[in-house]
Image (cartoon, rainbow, N blue to C red):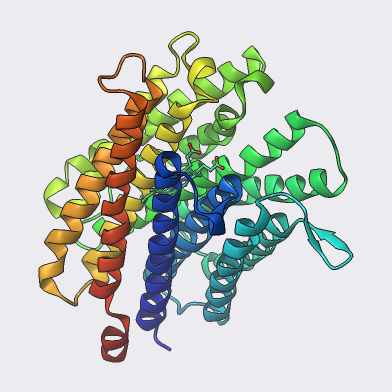
Length: 411
Ligand code: HEM
């Protein structure tokens, strides 16, 4: 199996999971206005199925496949044996997480005489597959002389992923040992989910973007890498329930977040200078990166985070980052490189994705600031629900564009 063909198969898988998780998101959004159907009545569990499939099935395999694609260019060696197996295990574990969380989220499920935390077990299983990825990555990059910018970014992406896995291990431990400490549970949950998304996704994505741009022109010097990684580490505290965060914890996290955002802005600025080389969806994603930087500055406004952190503005922040920035850039890069079928589909995909995501994120912002926004809650919930159909449909069309069968055979 060639590296190219392997990459295409796993990217097709990742985009399929994006489509499934996005349609699950549509179900949740319409659930707010119409109520959830009987076959999906546990809203919290379905929400966990949605968010974990997005993390484990879409962004993680998507990033890993692209890292494996570019890595041999920097190491000068073929990929280590076992990469195909690792990607297969990662994909399988991600698939498992969907039904596991759908049934009961992070709660216990009675199976026969046993009471099992299926969601936590699936998360642990996923975490184990990432350890195999890290082990193979370390083997692949061991002994490299100077490490180019994308490799240094991936190094830090992996360090932050490993740090977040402490949360993945701690969370089931608190559930299994029945530690009734909400602070500890929140700490582990957000160490896992938020550091995973903000750390691994952001650093990994920057690396993939620079690797793509580095194919045509030399890579720039002096881009922040280690400093960005270090400052991103404590920002997961901002994901915790404000009532469980002391003022000192908040300030450490908020100032680190500001520093990280300014360093991210340095990368964004460099990307903006190469605007014409970037696919439309990547350019669109960069705009949400700017909103992310603006959000980090706004969070320093006295009281804003405590007021917004536990409420609907949290969903706006999350989707601005994960859907607007991470997913738009990742999908844009994947389609630009591998989306060769149906040339006429690119425009509808762009229009559906950008129109839907733009309107959805706007509606989430309005729901966060409902007292100041025009229109009532019902109007904005309905707008968010209908807007979400756009990216979910775009993800399905993207699968047609990737047309794996035909491309794989021509690889
Ligand atoms: C079509 C795009 C999407 C739609 C329609 C959607 C919809 C939703 C909805 C309705 C919720 C629950 C909101 C609430 O409880 O108030 C949610 C939560 C969440 N979503 Fe999405 N989402 C989308 C894309 C994404 C993406 C791309 C990611 C990650 C890569 C993501 C990660 C999350 C996370 C982490 C949560 C919070 C889960 C929790 O707190 O338990 N979503 N989403």
